[in-house]
Length: 141
Image 1 (cartoon, rainbow, N blue to C red):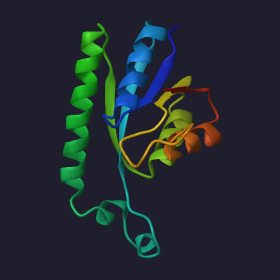
Image 2 (image 1 turned 90 degrees about the horizontal axis):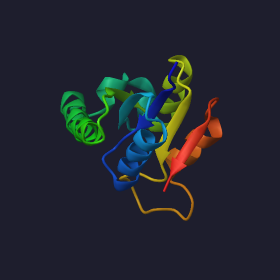
Image 3 (image 1 turned 90 degrees about the vertical axis):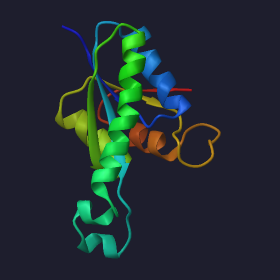
Image 4 (image 1 turned 60 degrees about the vertical axis):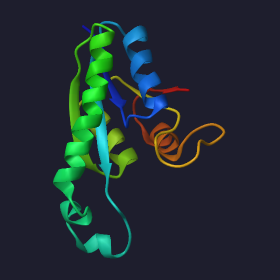
């Protein structure tokens, strides 16, 4: 039986390294690559549906699919197949919730993503995933 690995992916260099690490370290694993469309938060957001918080949710999903096409190309370069998914929500919550709900064995995540400046150790999403995850998390720099 092979491991089920969840790899959050946003097209950043650290997420590419995490994906490549996954293929090299877990060659027989079933890999799912997840792109999360971040949903704005705040007081008024509590009164809206997640779809309504994004000016153009369909366009955001399409952008996510384009980014996941890049991940699929990386997988093919490494001789692997992957499943891809686009989700809406708070990235760290979506990653942890999916990992637990869908019985993944490991999360492999880049140390920081496309957003903001790199921190000394971890980006905020990676840090929150490490803190909240009920399953092992591998952080790739």
